[in-house]
Image (tube, rainbow, N blue to C red):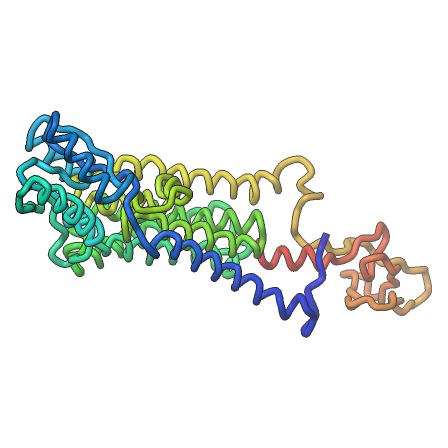
Length: 397
């Protein structure tokens, strides 16, 4: 059923936009303040080569520094602990006697957390904390935030693509729309790899081809998901996409701080939303021996394929399947023939309030006589023009 547009000056027209944007703004402020107003780790993975009494003292020292903040894993030797830090299985490793392995590529926040906590442990052992950076950040990425900002830029572009594809090309076929989505992802991935990689700023030093692939899949996943929400929920889908992908997605991405710093209700999103999966893989390519790459190459294509399947069912299968004529959103025009009595030249008759103009039957040379129908002017068999259907067709093809 078509809903009439609000007339200028009505309460709906005045208050509707205010309510929508304030809702989105409130969600943004609430989510980001909840996540980052006082970040602290929750079971951040760290390791040690110490055993027995020394390990028990280490656990107690970490619990005093940040209660519930760390999960301690044991490694047989320094080499195993070093590899674990380098591939981000853990965020730091304490070797005893004040020696700590860490990775500055995790960002300044993680570095401050582990050096402060293990510094207290070393002082309790009457040792001076000696640190070694085994996975340094890129020389052009001193705070470890480049992956987050690069991902945010393409996620925003994917969100905008998902909206504008239906605005600029409402009647584009499914095949060409999917081709457009793929083209956007490929070009976006190459662009980010060139700008952020060694050719550009050098802030994303990983291999260019895998980096471009991950970014392309992430952008396509965001664009496709936005398209799905728009097709399923109409204009409300734009707001839903901004909340899910831009606000929750970026806040839980782990680009500013690892997921272990997030509140418990936000933490699971970092494992499934395209932004978090993509950012982790980008960071892994840049400094952590491809950590997260395999996961990204599994999850991100699932998002893209899932979006394509929903759009196919919505835009193709529903139109071509049984009852398509009744379900189609295309505007329906009257297809009736005029009624004319022999030897007369009748003028068209009008229904009060009708908005349409009379049309002419090709090849007759006479003016038709029309019978008024419930939707405006109609001919034999009724019909008429469905304004609500035309409006829907303009927006959604």
